[in-house]
Length: 112
Length: 113
Image 1 (cartoon, one colour):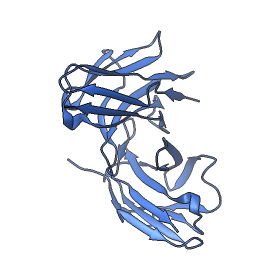
Image 2: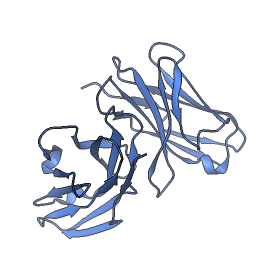
Image 3: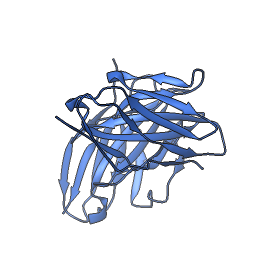
Image 4: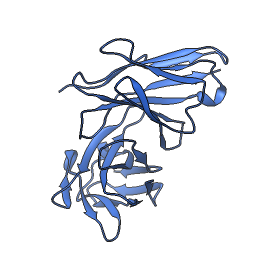
């Protein structure tokens, strides 16, 4: 069964550094999403992406965040200058036109 | 906008006992409803979903849920739990196009021998 994959599974970075989290959505999906889950808290929507542009973003998704689909397969989340509070599990998800979202296994980001 | 409430943050239960995890939602539009399970240090795995049709939905691992529109609920049930069901369970709602999921705060199910 096709699945969403994410790399790396874990990333440790210093505060102020840039990080790029990578996702490979399911191949025929058209809608892409990023969510985050701070330790012990609920999963929160960050951004949705369709047709090579952001379709919706949350208050969390400020100017430090950006998303990109640089080629036909990858979907990336970039955090330009990481803060301690960016430490979280980041989930990528994708879906077809009228379907449920399928989530990747997540990237655990730790900002020191 | 939609929102999801999971009233129980933790549910302890003995093995082979039945369990119900509660989920209520609010929405002004038609919704899709989902239950996800998260095992320690792992991602979100879809248990079951309600999109339309029969209000009783059966999922993986013997779980089922019933959509109750009048009570705006989507409670998750299992008649007999196993130790391996110990995990955190998240209820989620999206609009009827499947965009922008809203998650509940999660319920930790702890199955004891």
